[in-house]
Length: 195
Image (cartoon, rainbow, N blue to C red):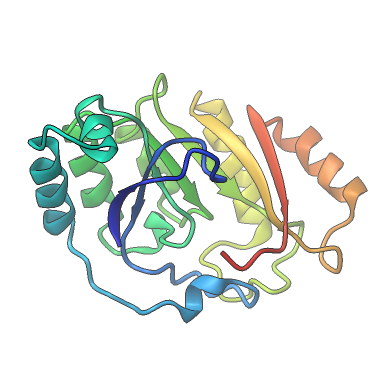
């Protein structure tokens, strides 16, 4: 884990991805719970970035020097980490735009002090109007919707993600209703996947 360049035809919108410690949201369907739990410090990540930045050859050093946006993937869910503020501040201090894939936590309003409304994106997973299969999540489904509305009110670029789409949890009509309520800047829906 750490910073990596992605395949050009991957699912993520940016070519830099940061995976750190495994997400602890505890969704029943998620593949991340099977990953090895490591304790990767932000200092180690920053040192890796600074070291790669000095290399003259390769796609990864080039993307780092260009300050390409970093996707912090949902297998990490940065906001399930105790030190999420420290991690985001450190990456912003280096000048990277961020694309955060998350289910959020109860302190999501602190994002307004960290993110740049012009450059950063919050990709928020809400898989329905209930927490079926997500009983251990930090926020309830209702709290996730409240958070989405708040992000939009603050002018933070917000993408609603029904990821994964679980037909036993939510209908297409309910997804349409969620979009009407939240009015996200973007929308993503993916079938159940294991990577």
